[in-house]
Length: 236
Image (cartoon, rainbow, N blue to C red):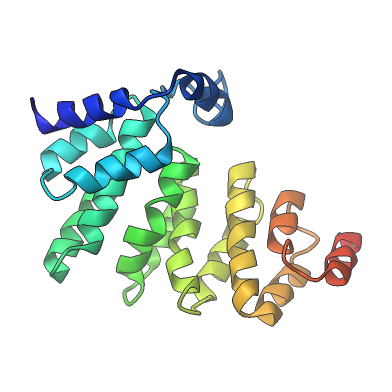
């Protein structure tokens, strides 16, 4: 059996009918929703990670490309888990660059929030940390929800290393974005900055409080002390 078929077979073996029924509602696959038409097998993330760890060393780029464009959500996510492992375990800059290029070339398959959040900072953020970051601004200005989420979520890698500047620049660009998934992502990253430097995060929130969508604001100040949180919400 080909490796791609084996991986899909392994996923199907651990699929749960109740999850296959639940996931389409959870991931908003209805007509006009952000994941319209996405298909699910019903496999939970721990099983996907286990299968990814089993096969990531043996799978090649061509096989991985087939999986990342699967119509089934869990097949795509499993391929992303393998891709992250490929990148993180690469022993040379050339090899890492190869997998970053693969990620960007195939990001059409990275088309839901969990797929983005499981790959953007681990691959693109890690790669760009000590390099020119113009690509993130191009993605932020793209007319594509998932490219825009990739842009802000990639900066989680920077935030973890106390580098906040790019996140704040992108947050300003995405401030008036119409979609709730971007509001949540930006708010989340502002919260992560606040976990490390509350003054910087609070200054940004107070500067843009009149423009910031309510969901973004609530995510950003979620960990503030109750008094600060109530004060800021009353200012909105």
